[in-house]
Image (cartoon, rainbow, N blue to C red; front, side, top):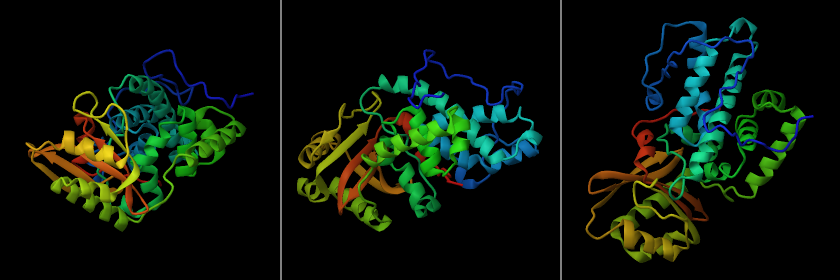
Length: 343
């Protein structure tokens, strides 16, 4: 009987190359076809090979597969690697034997993402300072999809980080993409009964930690505009007027740029952190409104160069969470929009 307890810690630090179909041959290494939409230029730069059924199906579901991988990993770079591995396996599949090609692709992607997640968790344990998900410049349709916006928000992605790899996979597939228990069981190599228990445990865990309220895009934009003015005026009272008393600031410099090694908690401490550190008097600060992970955010420039991206969590009209990604290795996907989808 399959255990419902997670035992996801591998001894090999490299990604495990598990087979999605035991009888499938190892495919020749080829490059995964790119998304064909203009908005997906941030997620691929390769030219699709000559059209064929396998390629057409992969391209048709590419945005979905990327979204699944990104929500499981919190990293666009790792999600792209997962899609490459998915493509390699897909090219070796006998399509005549596949009843539901979309479900099969999601299954391969989930397995590859699980392998990658178990490996990157070890890297993240040695990460310098706080780790934040890689921000994505998203298309307008993402902001219009409330469920998608919530699932890829910085706040939710950080909650997902507290799950075990299998719990995260089950939660993402069930709660975000509404995949059936039998199909999830096939993807994570558990029994349907075990998957139901894992889903219940993960749901309870997430519900205890997810943002308490949902705000409209208009409220979020208003908070972003207020924070933008505070950054430009550098008036301490402007910060204190818009920050929740128990606000939490998480900044990610990756050991490359200056950032707080631990979360900064409290409106006064957050204000001092910015006015006394990041926003030094001899630095010219400019800000630009943007949309990151489906929500209003700010691109912050110091002396004319992009310094980082600030995402926010807003509750009851006040900013209760600030997520500042300064690590330059995580800013490559804020230059061009990435297409995400739940379908």
